[in-house]
Amino acid sequence: MTKAELRRDALARRRAMSEGEVAWLSDKLRKQLFRSFPVPQWQWLHVFLPIPHQHEPDTWSIIRHTWGERLAVRLAVPVVQADGYTLRHYELTPDTQLIDNRWGIPEPVGAEEVFPEQFDAVLVPLLAFDEAGHRVGYGKGFYDRFLAQCRPDALRIGVGLEPPVPRIQDAWPGDVRLHACLTPERVWQFAS
Image (cartoon, rainbow, N blue to C red; front, side):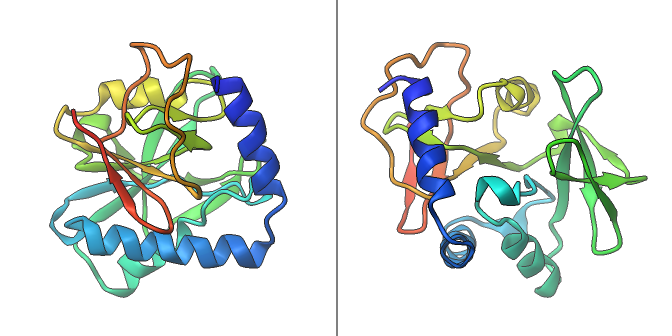
C-alpha cells in the first residue's frame, strides 16, 4: 500500500476507537517501553504529546510514569515553529505550563530549549509502519527533518497502535527509518 492509502485507513480505524480503548492500548505501550528499553539510563527522552481528537497513543502515561518513578531521564517535547516547517524542542517538567496550539497539541511556554543532538531516544508518532522500519505520519515531514538532526546513535522508536504492514510501496531514501517500534502487543526491532 502507498503512504496515502495507509494514512487514510489508519486514521479511519483510530477515529473508530473509543477513548477507553486508546487509554488501554496506551498503557500497554508504556509497559512495552519500560520493559524493553533502558529508559532510566538515558539523559534525554523526546516524547510527543498526543492529539486527543486524532486518538493518538496517550504518551502522558509514559510521562507520568517517568515522573512518578523519579527517573533521572529528562523529557522534552516538540513545538511547531511559525514557519510551519520546523520543530524546536523544550523540556517538559511537572511544573511546565502548557497551551494548545492551532492543532490542539499542548506546547510548553517559557521552558528551556533542548537541541536534537542531546536526545538519547526519540518517541516518534506514526499512523502506520512497515517491516523494514519505514513509517507513515501525517505527511508534513516534521519528524524526518528532526530525526536527521539527531545523533546517529539516538534511538528512533515509533509508537503505534497496530502491527506493521509488510511494505510501504512509496518509501524513499529521504524517509528516516526507525530503529524499533512499540505496539501494544510487542516491540518490533529493525536492522540499521
